[in-house]
Image 1: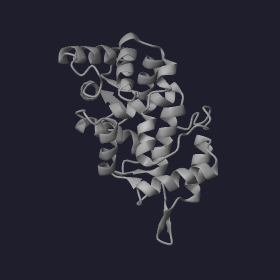
Image 2: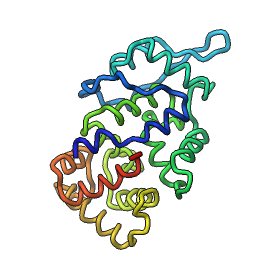
Image 3: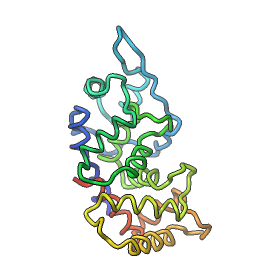
Image 4: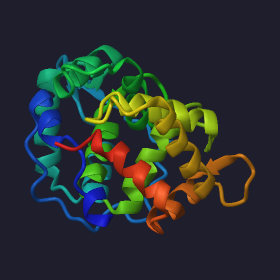
Length: 235
């Protein structure tokens, strides 16, 4: 479970699209207990008509991704070449998804994955948001990876997942996997069984803590469904 969770993101596609170089020197010991990025905001400046990355953002990424300052600047310069405004809007994100999944029905899943990146829910993905997620998904711990997956499931971002949300995201995810032909009733049953395992207190909703606990303890259906979601991000 741990090895699979640590290596499931389509990094090669993303780097190719954004003209970024691989994060081959990042530490795997960062971001511990540093997950609350919902309140972060990337304040970019402008010098001589060119977007520049604020010193605050440089130091933040140096601290939480273990990249050197020059590496952060290099990634940002490459990012700006592709996205002069210093951010990914939904249209740009759609183009990236088309590269990753050219033959798939991805209209709904785009919204789920975009939500995973857009931590401050302003409708755009800035450089800091993007780099944090890329780092976590490529080098983060299983718990950190699961926290990102939870954001996919939590459609209304209220901190818990209902059975309706769970089934909807599961259905959309199956459209991108190599098992998209699995009977709808089987998808529904898998989602229901996993939800029951995760809903420890039986209140009809799954919290982040319950979700992470069920997956890390390798509950049968929870693990099965989570791995199928992870398949979406496998190379």
